[in-house]
Length: 473
Image (tube, rainbow, N blue to C red):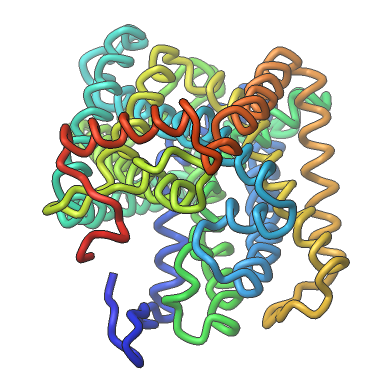
């Protein structure tokens, strides 16, 4: 963070250009999804043609959502992203419930999925003819999470260096896959596209396929977290979206074209590491490079999610919706150690299930429910606060269409994945008594407040941390 003094007040400099904004969106989206979701989409559609259409529609759907969030990000400029929008529109309890499901479901599950993808690709070369043991995958994913937790606790600079270095790995891997796949097609290898639209078309399968596709586009709203640092945000925020989203969609569709041209449907269905199967067929003696680059890419992805998750919890703690110690930082290293550690611990629980696609289905309902609430908040604020400054105002048809699609997606998936829906709703509902028992009474003193104070003092001594307001950062 770069800051300066203006009239005695520290403010963030607007150093992020349009090109930087495009890079943030592209870099945030392209991660583990393109290396794991192709199999997930194809499992549910079992059709090459409809899989490619779902990838293109997922990009269009994400673009509409990003444009709606551009309006939210410029009329509600406080930090916190989705959390801040729900807080502004609907108040404390819905905002706390958002943090609750983010803490227990969305972020830990996302980190677990990316860590498991890293582990799948890292161990796949040792099991070329069969699937890696699930225990080995889970253990390696846990090691990845713990190692990056240590890095994020020790140094912000180290965590950013990890992010910078490993970002290039995913770009190299994708460029190699796309170019070699397109060359393969140009030489006449198109037999895998025969009868491309034979497959499954029931609503449940289509909805679950969309979940896998949309998971790969996750991160389209990350530029909203740094709106205050974006140069001329009212122009550059929508421009960055219009430039970045088509780029990502094109990369994803062409990467899937490459996969389908080389990998047979049977191999696609049986492979949890489709890029490795692709590399084995296309790169000959250099096939070992694919799992290495993909593993490096997903390793960096885990680091990025861990870093941003911990900062979201800091914001929630400053608002009073999480224990105060979540906003405390190390007195010398300036890292939010409690937030980082708790994020890791919950993620470790998730990696005990090595089925990546089951985890995607599990967390997707709560994720898209929270996004739908944000879009509903946009429409609600237009009605309740019509005079709120809106430097960017999208056509009303866009948020309405996006919200209706979210509701349809949630309804169909809840019908076909009832158990996951029930678990998700129970987790959300469990946050209501927690809010009234632990959050609301905090300002009233009593035994709960005394317990918070004692726990905070103990953790301060253990981790050498202080309140962010009391630090020199």
